[in-house]
Image (cartoon, rainbow, N blue to C red; front, side):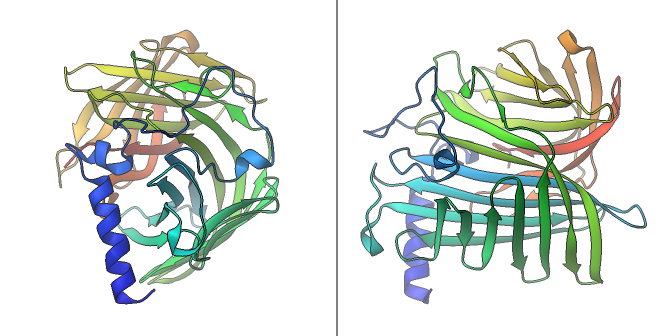
Length: 348
Protein backbone atom coordinates (compact mmCIF):
# COMPACT_ATOMS: atom_id res chain seq x y z
CA UNK A 1 0.00 0.00 0.00
CA UNK A 2 1.46 3.38 -0.95
CA UNK A 3 1.63 6.26 1.51
CA UNK A 4 -1.38 8.15 0.14
CA UNK A 5 -3.65 5.12 0.23
CA UNK A 6 -2.48 4.25 3.73
CA UNK A 7 -3.24 7.81 4.84
CA UNK A 8 -6.75 7.59 3.35
CA UNK A 9 -7.45 4.30 5.07
CA UNK A 10 -6.14 5.63 8.37
CA UNK A 11 -8.27 8.76 7.99
CA UNK A 12 -11.39 6.68 7.36
CA UNK A 13 -10.67 4.41 10.29
CA UNK A 14 -9.96 7.24 12.71
CA UNK A 15 -13.04 9.20 11.63
CA UNK A 16 -15.28 6.16 11.88
CA UNK A 17 -13.79 4.94 15.13
CA UNK A 18 -13.89 8.35 16.83
CA UNK A 19 -16.40 8.58 19.62
CA UNK A 20 -16.98 9.68 23.21
CA UNK A 21 -14.88 6.80 24.53
CA UNK A 22 -12.34 4.29 23.31
CA UNK A 23 -14.89 1.51 23.62
CA UNK A 24 -17.51 3.32 21.52
CA UNK A 25 -14.85 4.30 19.01
CA UNK A 26 -13.24 0.87 18.92
CA UNK A 27 -16.01 -0.60 16.82
CA UNK A 28 -18.74 2.02 16.49
CA UNK A 29 -20.62 -0.32 18.79
CA UNK A 30 -23.01 2.18 20.33
CA UNK A 31 -24.11 3.99 17.17
CA UNK A 32 -27.35 3.45 15.24
CA UNK A 33 -27.60 0.49 12.86
CA UNK A 34 -28.30 2.85 9.89
CA UNK A 35 -29.77 0.31 7.47
CA UNK A 36 -27.46 -2.56 8.38
CA UNK A 37 -28.83 -5.99 9.26
CA UNK A 38 -29.50 -6.52 12.96
CA UNK A 39 -29.17 -9.86 14.82
CA UNK A 40 -32.47 -11.53 15.65
CA UNK A 41 -33.37 -14.17 18.27
CA UNK A 42 -33.34 -17.84 17.31
CA UNK A 43 -30.37 -17.66 14.92
CA UNK A 44 -30.00 -20.37 12.30
CA UNK A 45 -26.27 -20.76 11.73
CA UNK A 46 -25.01 -22.43 8.58
CA UNK A 47 -21.47 -23.77 8.38
CA UNK A 48 -19.04 -23.36 6.81
CA UNK A 49 -20.74 -20.24 5.39
CA UNK A 50 -21.01 -18.46 8.74
CA UNK A 51 -17.27 -18.81 9.33
CA UNK A 52 -16.97 -16.27 6.51
CA UNK A 53 -17.81 -12.56 6.32
CA UNK A 54 -21.26 -10.97 6.69
CA UNK A 55 -20.97 -7.66 4.79
CA UNK A 56 -24.58 -6.64 5.50
CA UNK A 57 -23.64 -6.28 9.19
CA UNK A 58 -21.49 -3.35 10.28
CA UNK A 59 -19.04 -5.04 12.66
CA UNK A 60 -17.38 -8.47 12.69
CA UNK A 61 -14.28 -10.16 14.04
CA UNK A 62 -12.24 -13.36 14.07
CA UNK A 63 -10.44 -13.22 17.41
CA UNK A 64 -7.93 -15.78 18.66
CA UNK A 65 -6.00 -15.77 21.93
CA UNK A 66 -3.61 -18.49 23.09
CA UNK A 67 -2.00 -19.45 26.38
CA UNK A 68 1.37 -21.04 25.62
CA UNK A 69 4.45 -22.32 27.42
CA UNK A 70 8.02 -23.09 26.39
CA UNK A 71 9.87 -26.24 27.39
CA UNK A 72 11.43 -24.36 30.33
CA UNK A 73 7.97 -23.44 31.64
CA UNK A 74 8.01 -19.76 30.63
CA UNK A 75 4.47 -18.56 29.89
CA UNK A 76 3.50 -16.69 26.73
CA UNK A 77 0.31 -15.17 25.37
CA UNK A 78 -0.51 -14.85 21.70
CA UNK A 79 -3.19 -12.82 19.92
CA UNK A 80 -4.36 -12.84 16.27
CA UNK A 81 -7.36 -10.69 15.38
CA UNK A 82 -9.02 -9.61 12.16
CA UNK A 83 -11.71 -6.94 12.37
CA UNK A 84 -14.12 -6.12 9.55
CA UNK A 85 -16.20 -2.94 9.54
CA UNK A 86 -18.49 -1.53 6.89
CA UNK A 87 -19.27 2.03 5.87
CA UNK A 88 -22.42 0.77 4.11
CA UNK A 89 -24.39 -2.52 4.22
CA UNK A 90 -23.00 -3.97 1.00
CA UNK A 91 -19.88 -5.65 -0.35
CA UNK A 92 -18.74 -4.16 -3.67
CA UNK A 93 -15.50 -4.63 -5.57
CA UNK A 94 -12.15 -2.87 -5.81
CA UNK A 95 -11.74 0.50 -4.17
CA UNK A 96 -15.52 1.00 -4.31
CA UNK A 97 -16.14 -1.50 -1.54
CA UNK A 98 -17.26 -0.01 1.79
CA UNK A 99 -15.56 -2.83 3.72
CA UNK A 100 -12.60 -1.89 5.94
CA UNK A 101 -10.24 -4.31 7.66
CA UNK A 102 -7.93 -4.04 10.65
CA UNK A 103 -5.58 -6.71 12.01
CA UNK A 104 -3.93 -6.91 15.43
CA UNK A 105 -1.20 -9.36 16.42
CA UNK A 106 0.61 -9.58 19.74
CA UNK A 107 2.92 -11.77 21.79
CA UNK A 108 3.05 -11.33 25.56
CA UNK A 109 5.92 -12.58 27.72
CA UNK A 110 6.30 -12.14 31.49
CA UNK A 111 8.27 -8.91 30.88
CA UNK A 112 7.55 -7.80 27.28
CA UNK A 113 4.52 -7.12 25.11
CA UNK A 114 5.01 -7.08 21.33
CA UNK A 115 2.26 -5.50 19.20
CA UNK A 116 1.65 -4.93 15.50
CA UNK A 117 -1.30 -3.56 13.51
CA UNK A 118 -2.38 -3.73 9.86
CA UNK A 119 -5.04 -1.62 8.11
CA UNK A 120 -6.60 -2.43 4.75
CA UNK A 121 -9.45 -1.66 2.37
CA UNK A 122 -11.51 -4.60 1.21
CA UNK A 123 -12.09 -5.53 -2.42
CA UNK A 124 -8.47 -5.27 -3.60
CA UNK A 125 -7.17 -8.59 -2.26
CA UNK A 126 -5.21 -7.08 0.61
CA UNK A 127 -7.52 -8.47 3.30
CA UNK A 128 -10.59 -10.64 3.51
CA UNK A 129 -12.20 -13.89 4.59
CA UNK A 130 -13.39 -16.84 2.54
CA UNK A 131 -15.61 -19.46 4.15
CA UNK A 132 -14.86 -22.60 2.15
CA UNK A 133 -11.99 -23.21 2.18
CA UNK A 134 -11.65 -21.02 5.24
CA UNK A 135 -8.98 -18.36 5.06
CA UNK A 136 -8.79 -15.05 6.93
CA UNK A 137 -5.93 -12.75 5.97
CA UNK A 138 -4.57 -9.25 6.00
CA UNK A 139 -1.36 -8.80 4.02
CA UNK A 140 0.81 -11.81 4.93
CA UNK A 141 -0.97 -12.54 8.21
CA UNK A 142 -3.20 -15.58 7.81
CA UNK A 143 -5.52 -17.93 9.69
CA UNK A 144 -6.58 -20.85 7.51
CA UNK A 145 -7.82 -24.42 7.63
CA UNK A 146 -11.04 -26.35 8.10
CA UNK A 147 -11.67 -25.40 11.77
CA UNK A 148 -10.51 -28.87 12.80
CA UNK A 149 -6.93 -28.21 11.74
CA UNK A 150 -5.77 -24.58 11.32
CA UNK A 151 -2.52 -22.75 10.67
CA UNK A 152 -1.86 -19.22 11.87
CA UNK A 153 0.91 -16.76 11.07
CA UNK A 154 1.63 -13.11 11.83
CA UNK A 155 4.62 -10.85 12.34
CA UNK A 156 5.67 -7.43 13.55
CA UNK A 157 8.88 -5.42 13.56
CA UNK A 158 10.37 -7.50 16.41
CA UNK A 159 8.33 -10.72 16.55
CA UNK A 160 6.62 -13.37 14.50
CA UNK A 161 4.81 -16.64 15.07
CA UNK A 162 3.76 -19.68 13.10
CA UNK A 163 1.55 -22.15 14.96
CA UNK A 164 -0.77 -25.03 14.21
CA UNK A 165 -4.19 -25.43 15.86
CA UNK A 166 -6.13 -28.66 16.42
CA UNK A 167 -9.74 -28.60 17.63
CA UNK A 168 -10.33 -31.05 20.47
CA UNK A 169 -13.94 -30.17 21.23
CA UNK A 170 -17.06 -28.69 19.60
CA UNK A 171 -18.03 -25.13 18.74
CA UNK A 172 -19.92 -23.43 21.56
CA UNK A 173 -22.69 -20.84 21.23
CA UNK A 174 -23.12 -18.00 23.72
CA UNK A 175 -26.30 -16.48 25.05
CA UNK A 176 -29.44 -18.04 23.57
CA UNK A 177 -27.99 -20.48 21.02
CA UNK A 178 -25.58 -17.84 19.72
CA UNK A 179 -27.80 -14.77 20.18
CA UNK A 180 -25.81 -12.81 22.79
CA UNK A 181 -27.68 -9.93 24.45
CA UNK A 182 -25.44 -7.04 25.47
CA UNK A 183 -27.74 -4.53 27.20
CA UNK A 184 -31.02 -4.13 29.07
CA UNK A 185 -32.33 -2.36 25.96
CA UNK A 186 -31.82 -5.56 23.97
CA UNK A 187 -28.81 -4.81 21.76
CA UNK A 188 -27.20 -8.09 20.73
CA UNK A 189 -24.68 -9.90 18.56
CA UNK A 190 -24.28 -13.33 17.05
CA UNK A 191 -21.50 -14.98 19.04
CA UNK A 192 -19.89 -18.42 18.98
CA UNK A 193 -16.45 -19.78 19.86
CA UNK A 194 -14.04 -22.63 19.36
CA UNK A 195 -12.41 -22.74 22.83
CA UNK A 196 -10.88 -26.22 22.50
CA UNK A 197 -7.85 -25.69 20.27
CA UNK A 198 -4.54 -27.26 21.18
CA UNK A 199 -1.53 -25.33 19.84
CA UNK A 200 2.03 -26.14 18.82
CA UNK A 201 4.48 -23.98 16.92
CA UNK A 202 7.22 -21.39 17.09
CA UNK A 203 7.52 -17.84 18.40
CA UNK A 204 10.34 -15.74 17.00
CA UNK A 205 11.41 -13.02 19.44
CA UNK A 206 14.54 -10.85 19.72
CA UNK A 207 16.14 -13.53 21.92
CA UNK A 208 15.58 -16.22 19.26
CA UNK A 209 13.10 -18.89 18.22
CA UNK A 210 11.03 -20.55 20.95
CA UNK A 211 9.06 -23.78 20.55
CA UNK A 212 5.73 -23.51 22.38
CA UNK A 213 2.66 -25.59 23.12
CA UNK A 214 -0.64 -24.75 24.77
CA UNK A 215 -4.27 -23.99 24.05
CA UNK A 216 -6.22 -21.36 22.14
CA UNK A 217 -9.69 -19.83 22.09
CA UNK A 218 -11.19 -18.47 18.85
CA UNK A 219 -14.18 -16.09 19.03
CA UNK A 220 -16.52 -15.24 16.16
CA UNK A 221 -18.89 -12.33 16.57
CA UNK A 222 -20.85 -9.99 14.32
CA UNK A 223 -23.51 -7.33 14.74
CA UNK A 224 -24.40 -3.79 13.74
CA UNK A 225 -25.19 -2.18 17.11
CA UNK A 226 -24.35 -4.56 19.97
CA UNK A 227 -24.01 -1.88 22.65
CA UNK A 228 -26.42 0.76 23.91
CA UNK A 229 -25.46 4.43 23.87
CA UNK A 230 -24.87 4.46 27.66
CA UNK A 231 -22.21 1.71 27.57
CA UNK A 232 -18.58 2.83 27.55
CA UNK A 233 -16.44 -0.30 27.44
CA UNK A 234 -16.12 -3.89 28.52
CA UNK A 235 -14.06 -6.36 30.53
CA UNK A 236 -14.05 -9.81 28.89
CA UNK A 237 -12.71 -13.03 30.43
CA UNK A 238 -12.04 -16.39 28.77
CA UNK A 239 -10.91 -18.82 31.47
CA UNK A 240 -9.84 -22.46 31.24
CA UNK A 241 -9.84 -24.52 34.43
CA UNK A 242 -7.69 -27.50 35.32
CA UNK A 243 -10.76 -29.77 35.47
CA UNK A 244 -11.38 -29.17 31.75
CA UNK A 245 -14.28 -26.72 32.16
CA UNK A 246 -14.21 -23.19 30.75
CA UNK A 247 -15.89 -19.87 31.45
CA UNK A 248 -16.60 -16.91 29.20
CA UNK A 249 -17.85 -13.87 31.05
CA UNK A 250 -18.07 -10.14 30.40
CA UNK A 251 -19.22 -7.00 32.08
CA UNK A 252 -20.21 -3.94 30.06
CA UNK A 253 -19.53 -0.63 31.78
CA UNK A 254 -22.34 1.92 31.85
CA UNK A 255 -22.31 5.69 32.34
CA UNK A 256 -24.48 5.33 35.49
CA UNK A 257 -21.72 3.29 37.17
CA UNK A 258 -23.54 -0.03 36.83
CA UNK A 259 -22.53 -2.99 34.68
CA UNK A 260 -24.39 -5.37 32.39
CA UNK A 261 -23.04 -8.93 32.62
CA UNK A 262 -23.33 -12.22 30.80
CA UNK A 263 -21.55 -15.55 31.07
CA UNK A 264 -21.29 -18.99 29.50
CA UNK A 265 -20.11 -22.00 31.50
CA UNK A 266 -18.63 -24.64 29.21
CA UNK A 267 -18.39 -28.19 30.58
CA UNK A 268 -15.39 -30.34 29.55
CA UNK A 269 -17.56 -32.07 26.92
CA UNK A 270 -18.63 -28.73 25.41
CA UNK A 271 -22.15 -28.59 26.87
CA UNK A 272 -22.94 -24.97 27.73
CA UNK A 273 -25.01 -23.17 30.33
CA UNK A 274 -25.80 -19.50 29.70
CA UNK A 275 -26.16 -17.01 32.56
CA UNK A 276 -28.03 -13.70 32.25
CA UNK A 277 -27.29 -10.26 33.60
CA UNK A 278 -26.39 -10.32 37.31
CA UNK A 279 -25.47 -14.02 37.60
CA UNK A 280 -21.76 -13.37 36.93
CA UNK A 281 -19.60 -10.71 38.55
CA UNK A 282 -16.11 -9.34 37.96
CA UNK A 283 -14.70 -6.97 40.56
CA UNK A 284 -11.41 -5.05 40.10
CA UNK A 285 -8.93 -5.63 42.93
CA UNK A 286 -5.71 -3.91 41.84
CA UNK A 287 -4.57 -1.56 39.08
CA UNK A 288 -1.41 -1.76 37.01
CA UNK A 289 1.51 0.35 38.13
CA UNK A 290 1.81 1.92 34.67
CA UNK A 291 -1.81 3.12 34.20
CA UNK A 292 -5.25 3.15 35.81
CA UNK A 293 -6.42 -0.20 34.54
CA UNK A 294 -7.26 -3.30 36.63
CA UNK A 295 -4.86 -6.22 36.32
CA UNK A 296 -6.16 -8.33 39.22
CA UNK A 297 -9.84 -9.27 39.48
CA UNK A 298 -12.22 -11.35 41.53
CA UNK A 299 -14.46 -13.36 39.17
CA UNK A 300 -17.52 -15.09 40.63
CA UNK A 301 -20.19 -17.38 39.19
CA UNK A 302 -22.05 -18.70 42.27
CA UNK A 303 -24.20 -21.15 40.32
CA UNK A 304 -21.07 -23.16 39.50
CA UNK A 305 -19.17 -22.53 42.72
CA UNK A 306 -16.62 -20.38 40.90
CA UNK A 307 -14.84 -17.73 42.98
CA UNK A 308 -11.39 -17.04 41.57
CA UNK A 309 -8.71 -14.40 41.40
CA UNK A 310 -7.60 -13.52 37.88
CA UNK A 311 -4.09 -12.03 37.70
CA UNK A 312 -2.32 -10.62 34.64
CA UNK A 313 0.93 -12.36 33.73
CA UNK A 314 2.26 -9.04 32.43
CA UNK A 315 0.61 -5.84 33.73
CA UNK A 316 1.71 -3.85 30.69
CA UNK A 317 -0.08 -5.83 27.97
CA UNK A 318 -1.33 -2.58 26.45
CA UNK A 319 -2.34 -2.67 22.79
CA UNK A 320 -0.89 0.60 21.47
CA UNK A 321 -2.99 0.39 18.31
CA UNK A 322 -5.14 2.93 16.46
CA UNK A 323 -7.71 2.57 19.23
CA UNK A 324 -5.82 1.30 22.31
CA UNK A 325 -6.98 -1.35 24.77
CA UNK A 326 -5.54 -3.97 27.14
CA UNK A 327 -5.26 -7.63 26.12
CA UNK A 328 -3.17 -10.30 27.80
CA UNK A 329 -2.85 -13.73 29.41
CA UNK A 330 -3.86 -14.34 33.02
CA UNK A 331 -3.41 -16.88 35.79
CA UNK A 332 -6.47 -18.16 37.70
CA UNK A 333 -6.46 -19.20 41.37
CA UNK A 334 -9.08 -19.83 44.05
CA UNK A 335 -11.99 -22.25 43.93
CA UNK A 336 -10.62 -23.30 40.52
CA UNK A 337 -7.09 -23.25 39.15
CA UNK A 338 -6.28 -22.42 35.56
CA UNK A 339 -5.36 -19.77 33.04
CA UNK A 340 -6.97 -17.61 30.41
CA UNK A 341 -7.16 -14.25 28.69
CA UNK A 342 -8.49 -10.83 29.67
CA UNK A 343 -9.52 -7.97 27.38
CA UNK A 344 -10.38 -4.50 28.68
CA UNK A 345 -11.62 -1.52 26.68
CA UNK A 346 -12.79 1.96 27.66
CA UNK A 347 -9.66 2.76 29.69
CA UNK A 348 -7.10 5.48 29.03
